[in-house]
Every structure is written in structure tokens, then in C-alpha cells.
Image 1 (tube, helix red, strand yellow):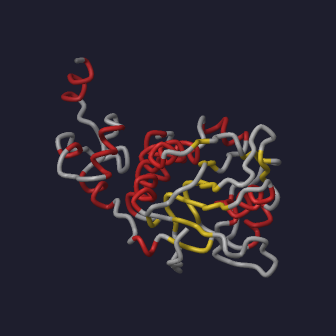
Image 2: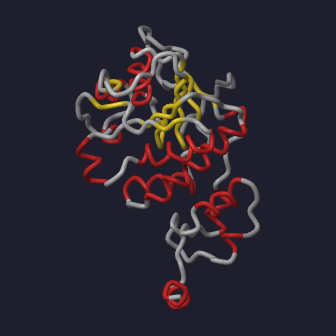
Image 3: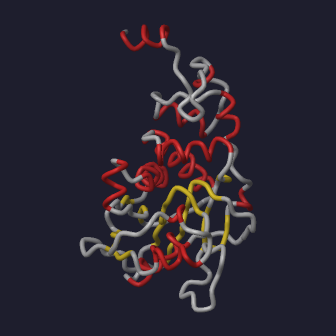
Length: 250
């Protein structure tokens, strides 16, 4: 009752753009995956404009090579990357909100959207593993956004969730503060390993993160999984700014 009264005094604002949200519209008028979002996360408030901008890329345009800048000695040159949303508009604002604004529920929304689209695309695996944060950024943020995305992905695909299967062997600098290119590769090279508590041998793995730019972070995490015996790894990011598509599915 108190919540309802406060809602009348202080109308809810959109969790993505911060403008007033139409509380009546957020539960109606949107079919399929978006209705599922609000049934499972009713505390989210998203205005009609932001919701209408959350348009996934066409099925054939969600597949990429992991690295935007391939190199000759790459041990996994054919590594695939799945990105359902372009890193712009509502999707871009969502990432900023859950990465820097503490809105963890929006990371769960990203996971619901990503997992639902993966299910529609017939993607299957044995286990979902998030890219780990450095210990410092985990303390600062309070959660790993890649893990929050991975949770609903595992639920929607009906496969295991392994939040601590990958570890960082060393802390790395922020990729966003480095120039695009091989500076980012040097920053994360050999930074990951599979925990002794997990056995990924012969498993098909989905590796999740929030955003893909150069792809070096997920690439290095995938290398660690292959070195530990994984049979197949699919890198999956909620959003990305890639232009070159690769229509070959996982």
C-alpha cells in the first residue's frame, strides 16, 4: 500500500532513460519476450520509447567472428561471437546503467532478452560461464554484470550456470580506457584460467559478457576454456558495435 501511495506521489521513472515511465503501458501492448520480461521482473519501469528501441538485429545478422582485428597466430581463428543487439539507443543506455549506475536489474533484463533470442535461434550448450571481473571492480560495483546476464540465459536455455568457473589470473586495466587494437589484446592476454573446482572437458560452453568491441576479452577467456578441454565455446554479448556480419551459426 505504501508503495502504491508513493507511486501516486512520485510517479516511476524509466530505469533506462530516467524520464517518467507510463506504468500502465509497461505491462501491456508488448508481446512475446517483452511481456516475459515484466512478468519475471515487475519492479522494472521502462517507458514505451525505450522499450520500442530495444529491437534485436535480424537472426542472420547476430553472428560475427570474435575478433574485430584477426591476427595470424590466433589459436582459435574461427571463434564465433553472438550479438543480438546493436550498442546504441536503449541497449547502449542499458549497458551504461547497469555497468556504471548500479542498476543490476537491467543486467538481468539484458540476460532475459539475450537468452530468449538464443532459445529462438536454437542455440544449445551444456553450461553458461560469465567473463569474470577483476577483484577491484567487483568490490567497486558489487556484482558482475556478465554473471547477471548469464543467470537468465542459463535458466531460459535449461543448462547449468557456473559463475566462478573462470578466474582472472591477474587484474587488468579497463579495456574502455585503452585504444582500440592490440593494446587491448596485450591487456587481457593470458589473463584467464579455469578454476580447479570446475571440469569443462568435452563441454559445449556459452561464454557471456555485456558488450563486445574488439572481442579480445572474450577471445582470451575462450582460449582458456579450450586449453582446459572444452569441446566448443560460443561467445555471446548482449550488445556490440560490430558492422561486419558472419551468418554462419553456432
